Length: 127
Image (cartoon, rainbow, N blue to C red; front, side):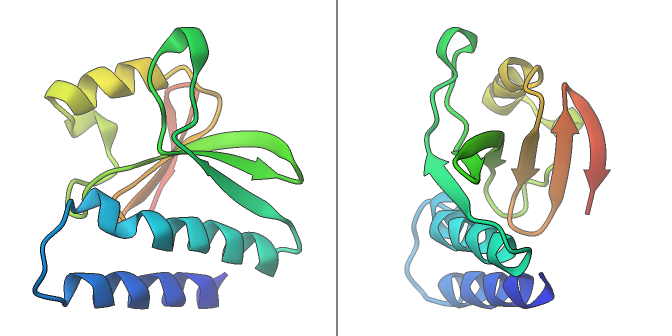
């Protein structure tokens, strides 16, 4: 897992060291997807991130649905680096989005620097 995190940090750092601007959140999407795959591989599992997963009646689309062994196990919502993963600090669009996603059984919020796992709206762990 440490190797997967190091690889993620290095590739994100490379992206933000370039003097070309893009949407900040979008700059970590591919690297985060690879992080999930690498972390799964280090644990002996096949982990796939499925982009923009529809929630049906709940509305919204988390950035990823996460599949382990072909079964949906949770979701990931990425935020722009620096925004943080503490949903209690969110306002506006991010707050409204969190209200829709807060009933999900497993959702990981991350801005690439901070990670927070929420289960049914409760913060289980922030790193």
